[in-house]
Length: 298
Image (cartoon, rainbow, N blue to C red; front, side, top):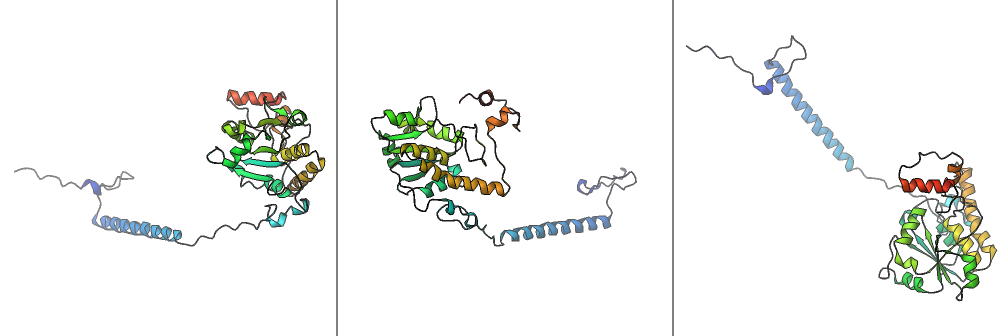
């Protein structure tokens, strides 16, 4: 007669004891309670899931934008139209602003103020990173004209004031790139169209009045300021520069009165040991930092 074999508990019903006195097998009552708990937890999870799914069906209220002024594109409560000229300035020069897409939705952008001061047929804003003859026939035609200039600093650029003295054809159009310095560099060098016009730059000692946005050096100017200086030179009228800078001064003054801080240039911060970030490890970026500290033009 064979010895009676020990009955084994199915593995799925074994509960690991938390103490030495805990039984290794579940009683019938424990099984029933465990099954009830499992059903309850499953039902609770399904209820939570159904509740969460119901949240997606709730109507979503769209974010309301503050009403904007149709002329200066500023919120109506902080409209800058009182600082704009009553009528657009009378100029003969055509201005093309090539704007990087990232600048389009920035709150403190200066291009809308610039455009509000000039006639619509004299100031055109084109937004994008890449331009070609096929995609923009108008811009291609403009770039091929001998009377078109592009304002971009560099070793090959000529001083604007010197150029108009010696040029046989007086400039009728000037192109300015709007964006950060890295964005402007990308647009200029990756679009062959922009190397067709004569490249010019501004040699001026004025410091930027756009003090609520950090500039690389003390000599860097905002897009509006570049346009103001260039147009005053081409039109031979200093009143143009004063008129175009007025809304920019008002914008900065308002922002400073409501909590904004004056943003010193990166050059100034580096020279005075105030730059808050660690120096970059990348050799190329580190070299640029060193050039800024030594006031070498890059």
